[in-house]
Image 1 (cartoon, helix red, strand yellow):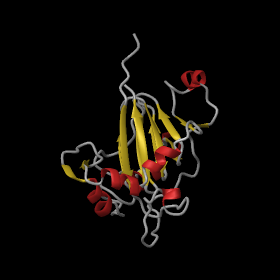
Image 2: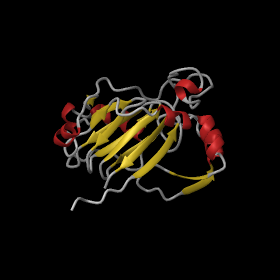
Image 3: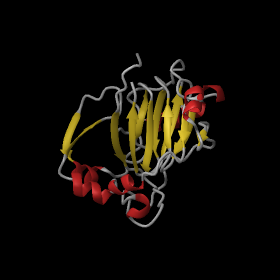
Length: 230
């Protein structure tokens, strides 16, 4: 019998410094980009993407070459223009501004939980931060962790990914940010010890196999949706 598949949709919004405008107002960035003075980017894209991009991948090829063995970036998978419009800052605040959301730190020991209205989170907490601290703002992301296989699609912005196969545990501290890891540990890694890495752009979908280690960094205001399979 095939294993039970559980779909978990995770919608996450992060804000980073130095956003790239893809268009005017909500047409390109959904209204999520910063409107204040531009600041230096906390982190740039990688020098070379080491995750394969595929725009013409068949189901048979996906199962044979990627599903159980390595990550892949899927391009042109679907037209999400209607969903992107629903995810603009204006539309989400109008629809869910009074809804209470729960915040927790993106680390191994996420004991503290904070409940607050979505509008308060967007208007007061989405701003650049000290990149050495956990939370929202410049350099935010999720430290290394693993779980079942999944897909992650970027709706707005850019998200940089770092991935290792399960048998190759990365060197990291669970209570330090991915940005701290990138600045302090990554430069000393030999080429063979470095992860697969790539920046996922608007409209692209990253697939990662079961139990692959992965960490993320947001380069712009990033709206994304993930589907986890287990």
